[in-house]
Image (cartoon, rainbow, N blue to C red; front, side, top):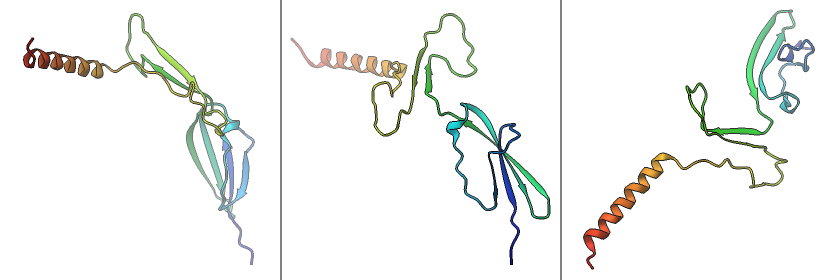
Length: 134
């Protein structure tokens, strides 16, 4: 006895041509390397053996290209004057060997660390002055 199965059709964004059409249940590998970086929508259309359809849309963001790190400004910031920015872009490479040069984003020293250092230096000066005599 043959059991009719639901059919699933996969679309990416607003494309009219599906990327795949299969019988359910199915396991599918979506290759994001063929998509541009940015926001995309995966649209799944299922059709039952009786002809009824169901639709599900899943939004996702592709980031295959080099990562971009920016220090000095954040999303929706209110700014004025001249902004010193530190910008770095780095790629994952071929993932067979690890290249350390350029894979980390340099950052400025945080202000809380400067405050802690000044406090420690002040305490050290106080300790030296009060506990040692010439």
